[in-house]
Length: 273
Image (cartoon, rainbow, N blue to C red; front, side, top):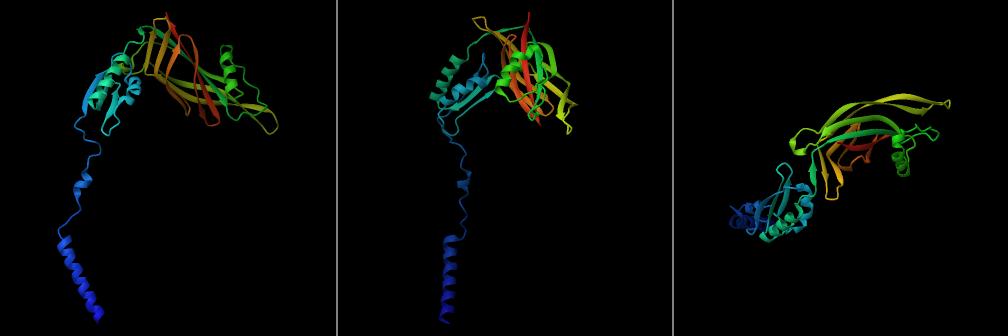
């Protein structure tokens, strides 16, 4: 009986404590509304116009000059050719000086026409040991010798050669400087159970495009061709990158696997005078 009375008294006491200390109180909702970044009154904002270089090239050099405080930002916009900075005034001043040194004419742009030659090589990643290699085109002998020292592929087949002329075209003009598509055929050799090598015909569609083409020369007379956002797709294999190539230079753009095959692109850019 004493235990029951004690429990009842204890329960009443707890109820009173809750009524006095806990009734009407809600969790402090203001704590969850704290800003996600530092609202520093010392921060300023500035937009820099870039005239001679790509903003994304310059931003790599100036980003370390920021304060690193939360809320401090450095961003770029290629369409408007601008870099936006939000930081302390002294950091903005340091970034401004760096931009003045970096945003200078690097070379003179040249208005001209360019002939692009894209050669598509196909090889198998699982070629049989007794496979007889396909004779490569003589014009690619030097390139294939270099690739044979790098890759373990034995058979290189030239499955497509694409030649297209285009005028210089800024990536900011919109559209493409170069665009095209087609299909390629090749012979794929395999080993039958009776020991004879036979061939089957393969086929795949390809598509390519270049956003911008720019030709430039420096004070030494060196001429370079810039291909912006070069894209090539062959079957399910894709190569996409920015390229810089010298006039008439053969350049192995890259390789991309596609099932048991590998695609290799060899590109030559030639200025038409």
